[in-house]
Length: 99
Image (tube, rainbow, N blue to C red; front, side, top):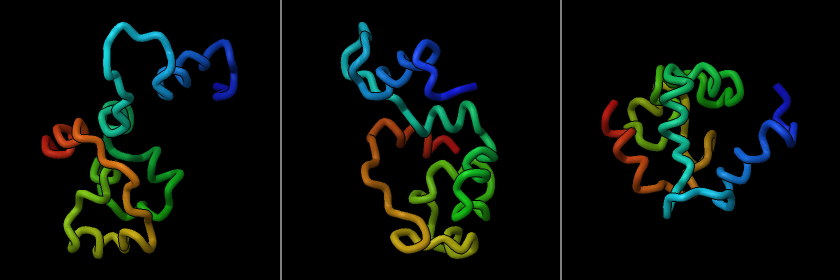
C-alpha cells in the first residue's frame, strides 16, 4: 500500500484535514477511537514509537492518561522521554474511560 497514491488516499487526507466533503457538521477524525478499533493491542504504535514499547495493551494510545506509577514502570516521563499532548479533544474521553 502506498500512502502517497493520490487516487486511493487523497479523500482520506482531505477528510483528516477537515476540508473534504462531509454532510455532517463538526466532524473530526478521532485518533483514539481509530487506534482502539484498528490497533487494539497497540502493536503498530509499539513498532514505530519505541519510547512507548513498555506500555502494555491499549494504554499505549493514551499514555498521558496513565498514572505516574504506570508511566514510571514503563520508563516514560511525559515531557522528557515522550512529549505531552498538544491537544486533548473532549470526545476522546469516552474512549479513555471505557478501558
